[in-house]
Amino acid sequence: MTYQVSVVEVSHPDVFDYMFYPEQHPSTLTYIQNQFTNISSTIMESGKKLIEDSKRMMEKFYDSNIERAARAAIRMAKNLIHPNQVQRLETLETIQAASPVMQRYIMSEPVLRELLDQQLCSGYAGSYMDTDPGTLAKWHYDWRRVNNGIVQLDGEQWVATTYFEDLKDGDRELTGDEKFDILATQDFAKLCVGRGDDPTNPFGGKVG
Image (tube, rainbow, N blue to C red; front, side, top):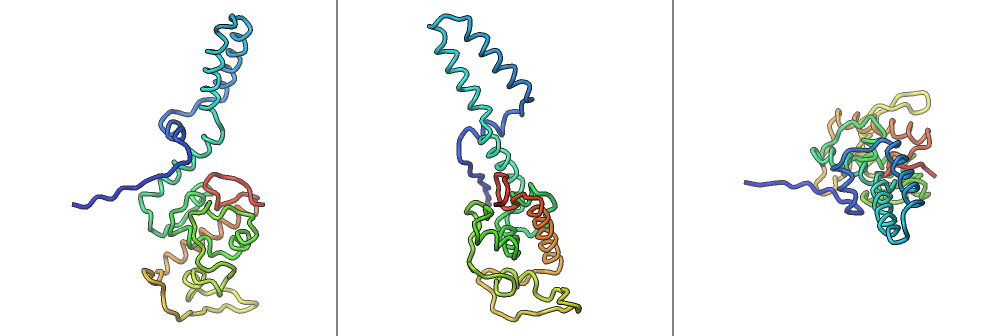
């Protein structure tokens, strides 16, 4: 019997604590902070160290960086169900948490590639490997794989170009449905860029 284990890597062990415990209402944090302030003004000096230690623990729990990392880990964990499957991604969060195979095809989109070349987007924080740096559109291998045989508007006429080339080891021709799913995902990613969001940043963020 063969078992497959999916692993989610995180930057800090506190991320797992956030994943397993329920999210707290913002008013809870405000209440706790006020209580620390009130207590600190009334206790003796010998008790202030305990209060300060407790306050640091509370602030670590509510650390915004840990919260963002935990949210990213949760999104990535959901996509591990089909880690190598082409699928249509229709929200900013799912594109930011794209599986490796979808990262590859999302990053073949020319607008995103130009942003990556100018270091204006995350490019999936190092998990995406650009095998054809400095190339765009038909000069980029993955772009050709996605757009091979797809009817597109060229000026005032519709054309379909077929690219005959040797495939890289492990590759196969994408099906028509897979190509349309990738193209739809790329279109939504460009809409996100137009709003200023970085669809290639697993931790969220803006382009630029």
